[in-house]
Length: 151
Image (cartoon, rainbow, N blue to C red; front, side, top):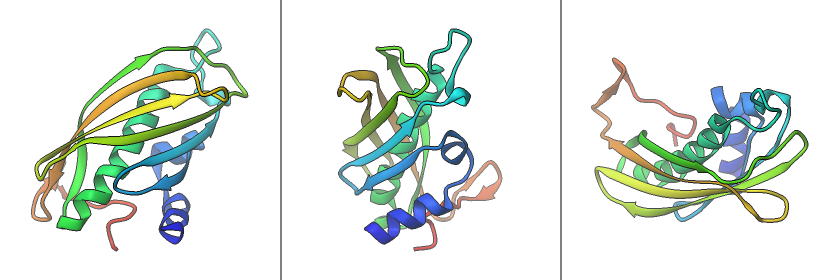
């Protein structure tokens, strides 16, 4: 798993890379990540933008759900992200997050996640529902591909 984790972090694209988020643990039962708050994470009041918390939660849920779905040759895509913002944080805060499955069905999965600060206080909490796609399904008109897809 350590090799797969380092490959995932090295090949991450888009949002996770732009945000500087690092996956620190990833199994079908739990996914963890870390992120140090920087200026690109802020909104107008100098606190972390809620979209950052939503993105962390959805990314962790997606990684965990994919690790389950790929055993069946499937991919996953988020259908719903319900995130609650609990505590404001500012630049320099070191956040860590953890996601665990609630259900891991053949067609949909639901994952719960929390973002915590250095003192393990909840910063944000959320639930993500994901759709499991079979290999013959397309997404936005193209074959589904992902960072860990070719394994």
